[in-house]
Length: 226
Ligand code: CDP
Image (cartoon, rainbow, N blue to C red; front, side, top):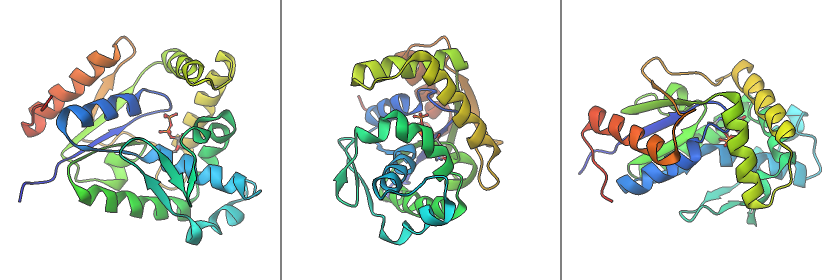
């Protein structure tokens, strides 16, 4: 049996990880797993149930009933609801870091993520993939970019998706999430010791994808299939 390869791409909010990770997975023929979408879906569900995402006990009480399905075409389902678009809305972005700071919720989602990673070779992006979820990943990348670049990229994405936000609000959201994500007690956003830092501030998407593919080639000798 061929050896499974795991590529972990971590980094702060809106660093372009998902875009790059998705493209890298496609070029390599690997499975792409967007762990941020799982935290976002959980957050949407807490709000859908009329609960306050800042209430840890109430949010955690939903763990037994939560079922998340990440489809190959990018569709995200939680308990049968298609939340693909809704999880990108500002209300979800503004609350997701509270949900992601609850240990019980993290442990439940991390268990799902580890199961997904047994399905084949994967590219998984998030905050803690190289440091906690898949510590044995053969390739670990920590993707960064300046706050301004990240906020501008996310603002443009929102405009393209028809999600109403202002650049100022996006800057505030990115800064707030970075702060909460890197200061939570359990499993904070952190660069794994053996991760390769990749600053994409002045790179296009194609250049970022090529840079990751080059690191993959150097580390595990795998080349793109397309
Ligand atoms: O795409 P963006 O960088 O905006 O965020 P995301 O990857 O969709 O993640 C949304 C939020 O989920 C983050 O701000 C974190 O609070 C949380 N998250 C996490 O804690 N751990 C992960 N592995 C992935 C996301």
